[in-house]
Length: 358
Image (cartoon, rainbow, N blue to C red; front, side, top):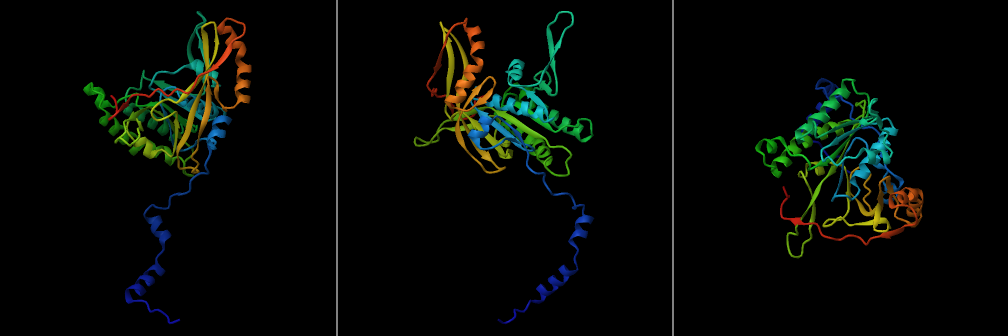
């Protein structure tokens, strides 16, 4: 085969490259940084969650969204993550802006919480423990949330907070931006813009950079995202599940779990009933991994949420849960026998909109 001759320019280029030291160039320009990422670790959720989704739980060092209509299991997943984090010496940082928080529920789920008791009255006056908690007493805007997260990451970098951090925000869509507050008008476009600026361009980048080998700690951000249902765009179209606060967090997230259905909660209640009294002790709910850039697994199934966490939707686990808690339910219901009622799945459509409701 005849040898192909190089052009003069190709020959000159090859000569220059042969004498060029790329490593020296990188050193001179400050580009010799560590580009290796840590091996992926997970904060495990319950066996039931793992069975249904085929993923271990919450991926560390990532932006994670738990989204869905009200009362579909988002807080259960958030608390399971917090409990598992405590067991692994990862510090849960609760940012509670929706103000539906319950310490009794957190303790029931297994959170290690110390009761601070007034010595004179014997009353519980506070809760303390291996966690950080803030709410609307100090956090009132999207910007406040971002500043708070960045401040803790900065303190961590200075050596003042020697923990991996698990930020748990409940929830996106529950606080407006500062411009909305100042104008006394909850403007969705302004709020979405603030989410994009404060998180998309700032906080989220700091979270994901902690995955690099050069970072001493690994930080994770788990957000509950409130949703709304958008009307179908045509007679043959279908309604869409939309995130409150815009889609900046969706685009930056690498792991998204959707609870319930698009146009309704899609849950069915499981109750203990006696003489008109009832205890709703579980809900069956649809669960789907909508986005997974960690290992690519996307799954859909049903799971049962209880005040103690998720259990599998099968007769064996439901019976075991009933047996474990029947005495407590009897006390509430006045003793004696009770009956278990499982309601049909609720398909009452949630109001749909042409644009995000204020």
